Structures are given as C-alpha cells and as structure tokens.
Length: 176
Ligand SMILES: [Mg+2]
Image 1 (cartoon, rainbow, N blue to C red):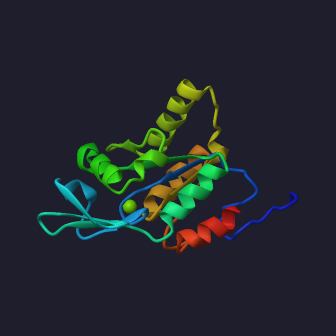
Image 2: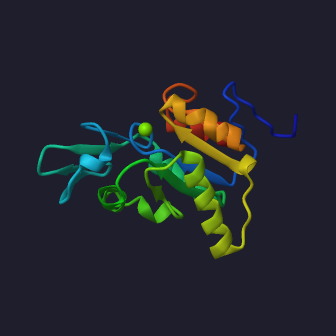
C-alpha cells in the first residue's frame, strides 16, 4: 500500500488518486420534493442557504456538506462536474440559484448514459486546459445502483450514495 494510502470497503481511495469528481443530482447531490428536477419550473425562490422552492410547492435541497466538500476538492485542485439525466433548462437554473454552478466544469445535463457524459466532460477539459484525465482518475457518485456497473466497466471508480457512503462528511474523510 502506498504511503498515506487509505482504502475503504467501497474502493474509494484518498491520497490524491482522483482528479475529476462527477456527481449525479437527484437524490445524490440534492434531495427534492417530487420525482425529478425536470418538473421544477422556474421562477425559483431561495428560501435558505441550501434550499430553493417554486410557486407550485416543489423544492430542491442540497445534501448537507456539499459546499464544504466542493471547497475542499477545489483547494486540492480537483475538477468537479455533474452527470444528470434531466432537462437542462430548469436543472442548470437550479444549480445557479443554489450558487454551486461556479464550482462546476462542463456539467452534463442530458438523457444519455453516465459514462458518455463523463467522457464529454473529460474531452471539454482537455480542449480548454490541455489536461488529460484518465478513467481511473475519475470518482463518480450516484444514488441509483444501475448507473454504477457501466461506469466501472468504463474504468472509473463508481460509488453509490446512501449505500457505499452515507454522507458527504464521510466522503470528505475518505478523500483526505
Ligand atoms: Mg439520482
């Protein structure tokens, strides 16, 4: 084992192995009142630091510890992005309303397989920054178990939110 190496049962490792962190949205990065984010029609009201509501009683709330995790990953020089199967309009507006869009590079909000979205993020980063990120340098987090095996076959580490990790405090401890 490498110096400072920490390995958890789910395979997520610390010690700077990952350069790109990709999150699902619904029931992973945030929880919501009903179904999927695509039903959240603007206009939105921000009712607390981590919560946004619309006029029809729908709401979206960031999971605890997301901002702290994002600050931590940025300080370490990581890239953060999103792979979410949703309609881009309302979803990107919610990321802006919650003031987390600024942490994200090339968020992918599209009805396509997650590994294809991750591939697009990597291609955009390479084009803009000249940085090549390998699949094994990607950590992907999603609440839906069926999204995990295709991303693992593609070559990334993929973990299930709510199962492999229970909170973002826990993930931050793993990545320290
Ligand atoms: Mg989800």
